[in-house]
Image (cartoon, rainbow, N blue to C red; front, side):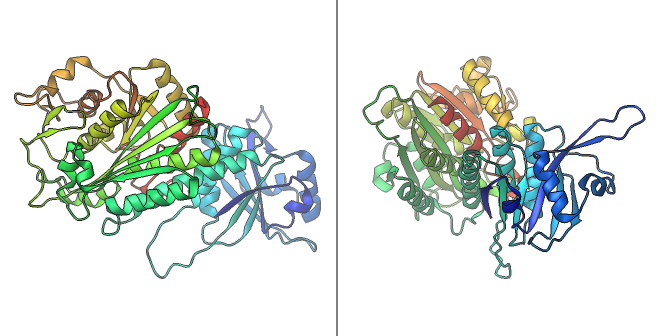
Length: 498
């Protein structure tokens, strides 16, 4: 799908195939009907009505509209000098950003399977345009390997005098869709080597630095090797991308943020095999964190943000084989700390620990953010609408929470409960890597406490996206499957601190 800006004049609008006009309904006074307000300049609405000899309010009232977000009603029209076939009236609810996202997604779904142009009279405020346009793009998204599906390419033209919000939305939405493509790719294609190839392509397109370590180059990455050596061909990969803004190489005033993403290209659970086994079909998406940071760094580069970003993709397959790690193994992580393996299905924290230690020791970041489909526990606690956020930086937590509400990538701050650090005590190593469920529970909390042992004194945020990275149904912005959660949150935050 294409999304673009269109001049706010009747000549431009009347050359599309469909005109979309968003509207709200004001509550009725006593003994009166609700008032319909169109989200467009009255002059252009009058010109549209004159051109097509139609009274839009009268036509809309025929449908008994509620004005709820995503409500769609269609009116067939024609005029001698116009290509327009119909007018779509689109409810935008209370005009909150959430309502504009819902309405945009509904329009995106509406245009699936067409090649038509939709001139869309939507909001004009920057945040509203971005929310609407991004969600329209996302609502249109589908992914398939069916050979019988014919590709189509509709275009939504946002009627606005300012192209910047539409351009911004296009970058964000394209990045999210790129992350979704990575997540949906089946694991007989997607392995750590394939992930490295995708990262190289993103680096080439955006002028990023990239290095990829494998084999003997991973000697110090004990966690990544322990997990990834279960699938020795092609084996694990440590993928390191760097975006430096123009003129930023020698500037100490530009903040440096390190993003670390869990990139498990398929997760059987290893020797601690997943149960029930039918849950394993979703495990091609266990690299959603790595997909999110790869998409994020590409978008940040396109937007020219004044912040240095390093992205560390910790890629491995957690397979069941003769070279799989075992419960009771002891791993030496990057930096030297030792960890006793308790459950091989808690592999994500092992690969992240290497990335966190590498960032602390080598990159001197101002902020470190890791993002991972880490624990099933958080899906039970927060469901699929909020990701868990762990940090001891209250100001940063507030900022990310606000950005999450504004963008739709919502996060909920969870506590780092110091009383539970005893769960990490091992008799034979520096740490256990999982807690005793019978005594502690709180699996997402104890996983975050484990990761914290590898961040040094850095300003650190852990995002557990196990619930939000996948959707169980094709609805709203999201397809069934990978959502691309985290891209909007991270891009908007990174561009705001630059």
